Amino acid sequence: MKEALTVHSHPPPGADAVEPTADFTIDQNYPSYTAAEHAIWRALFDRQERLLRNRACDAFLDGLARLGVAADGIPDFRRLNPILSQATGWTIVAVPGLVPDAVFFEHLAHRRFPSTCFIRRADQLDYLEEPDIFHDVYGHVPMLIDPVFADYMQAYGEGGLKALRLGNLERLARLYWYTVEFGLIRGPSGLRIYGSGILSSKGESIYSLESEAPNRIAFDLLRIMRTEYRIDDFQECYFVIDGFDQLFDATRPDFAPYYEALRPQPDIPPGVVLASDVRVSRTRKKGRARGTAQV
Ligand code: PHE
Ligand code: FE
Image 1 (cartoon, rainbow, N blue to C red):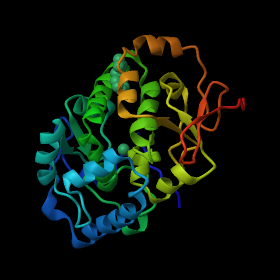
Image 2 (cartoon, protein in one colour):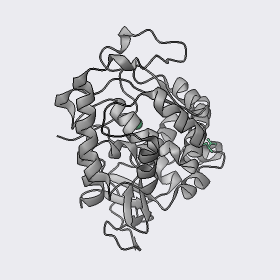
Image 3 (cartoon, rainbow, N blue to C red):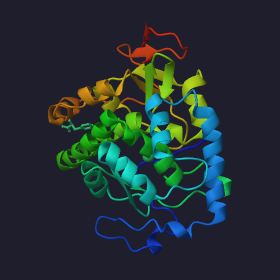
Image 4 (cartoon, rainbow, N blue to C red):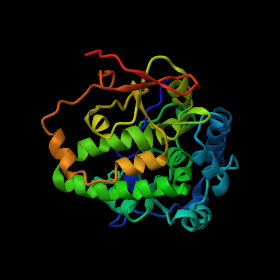
């Protein structure tokens, strides 16, 4: 089974049973987790632990260790938050499921990461359509310990509010998808994963680095904003950064002129490679191969 995690989807079953506040936050209600739910966390954690040791980027592995996110069971936000806020000023807030875009961006812009509380069922270990607490806390939260990535996420929240005002949410959402959710990073030890949608998926953490099927293309902001993505299968295309500074610097300028420049440009299907793309090789040696036009 393939794993897919969507950014824009419907709330999980039962989410409407909780009464959210105006900012959609709820209480994690930590004591309500059952032994069976903690066991699901353990199973998910254990298998990613083995897989990600030499596949995830250092920032993620350091973040996990510093937060003490471990196999024991579902983490308590009240334990993680002092460590996280001490490190980079971020806090986790509990939400019942996906929240409206403006609410999501408001939280990020204030360094609050909205996390779901429920955990997938035992028959959903490999496949889940919407984010659950394993995706949100195991996949996203450790990255917020990295100071540059932490700043990027806040800037993204501010950029989201602006994109909403300018009617360019679709273009900006692609940036989130191809970086925060499905980004790869290239360093001294080769290609590594920093995207949370990959980090929380057993199948895609292998596929994204090792399969010959997907295209891996050097990060290019405007190219990404034109690239469609699929939410129901492994990605056909990954974008590779050289470091979080590169990502943060490239996204620092005002996007309003970019949105204008992109307006007449056609979207690019996810499986297509352009002549202007710089392809990144899957092997551990460094170096760039020029792309070939397939359109
Ligand atoms: N600089 C962007 C803008 O003006 C904001 C942004 C930062 C968006 C980082 C995404 C990521 O819209
Ligand atoms: Fe996510």
